[in-house]
Amino acid sequence: MSNKNVFSLEAANNQPCYNGGPATLVCKAVIEETADSKTFIFEDAHSRSFDFKPGQYLTFRFEIDGEVWPRAYSICSTPTRPHNVQVTVKRVPDGKVSNWLNDTLAPGMSVEVDNLSGAFNYIDIAAKKPLFLSGGSGITPVMSMLQYITDVVDDTDAAFIHFARSPENIIFKDQLKFLSRRYENIDVHFVVDACDEEDRFDGTVGIISSGLIRELVPDLEERSIFMCGPEGFMRTARTIAREMNVIAIHEESFGEKIVLTDRSELGGEIFFSLSGKSSVCTSTETVLDAALNAGLWIDSSCQQGVCGNCKVLLTQGEVDMTDLGGLQDYERDQGYILACCSRPKGAISVDA
Image (cartoon, rainbow, N blue to C red; front, side, top):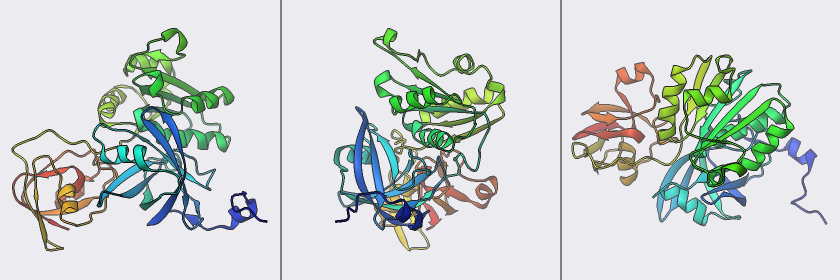
């Protein structure tokens, strides 16, 4: 009797690939990484393998309590093992999606994805001497890149510094230690804010600084920096990286949407001219929030103003936009805004 769970190399080599577009994924396993993060292992509902670049992300559409919540999560697995794809999600305080995933998603459940994308990947921007910097859940794309480098036995000289609150909060700690011990070209450093038992922690206690980075990676000037993490970490890392004489800086910032505190000068009515819909936006909501509340779908991924997927044309009014470089200068000049990080200042109209 055949067993459908037995891996077949012949079948794997001949099966079609998923490399983007809408798809249904089935959760096959859930792994608890830390007290507040889990890894979810997915297979394609149509038994396709996954063709992606290490460092890329999937855009999910989760249906929670009757509402659709789009989120982008970096893939932490490697394309050299294409029969499944894995994402690791860390809880965020008041994070609707991150908490739902950690509390609810279980093997056998299905989720929808819209696309596979991401310019922050090791194929398009490979470097012979990369320095990976990550904070918190920003470790996920780096894990994909490091596994790819070791799987293909690339001679890349990779240094990696990961920042976490405590040793218990380090995601993939055992896997990274294994890679560092097994491969001479992989140098891993852990830095934590605090540690109760420093004598048992084989890392560094401290905070991100140019001096600390230079101490851990003396040949800094020969390296290109790849950095990823929550926006608070990224603001500091971005400033420090620009002070250092490195070859290049590449960055990614994904995670749960940051909700601003109330700002009374923001908010107003939004007219979506192409669909004929309208919505009232509060002072803490974005154009994307208002669109979803009106039942209007605007393609989005990062929720942080990085990827540019939610670009819409502002035809009337003014917005407060706090993006992270997701628009080109000529797009700004033409009047485009990013819906995920733009808040209307009074009534506005957009082409959506």
